[in-house]
Image 1 (tube, helix red, strand yellow):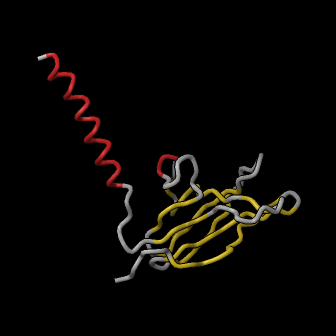
Image 2: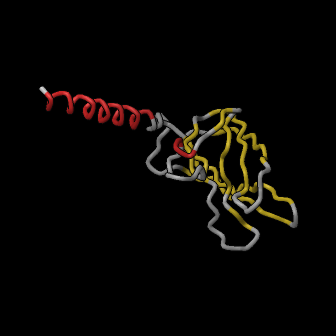
Length: 132
């Protein structure tokens, strides 16, 4: 009987983990926010997504562990609040975009002296995503 009681909590934890994993898979078609700088210029930085339509995001909601530089988005009009990944920066910038299905939106932060701006560096198709 002792062995049976030890397995029940373990089984519960495994089931909870599997169910929470299913919730993180996007429905199709979906779109992507990508805020990673591919340019190594000293004034170009990653952009972190902080809020979507006023909803605060946390690192554990990201599709990339420990960063919200990559996030699935539902198609439609969204207000995205981003922060430059620069030392000492706490300022948010609002980006309003009309998100199209199966589209990746890439942004970086470009700093100039004591301020920065979010720059759209590209729009591309999401691989293996099809609009039905």
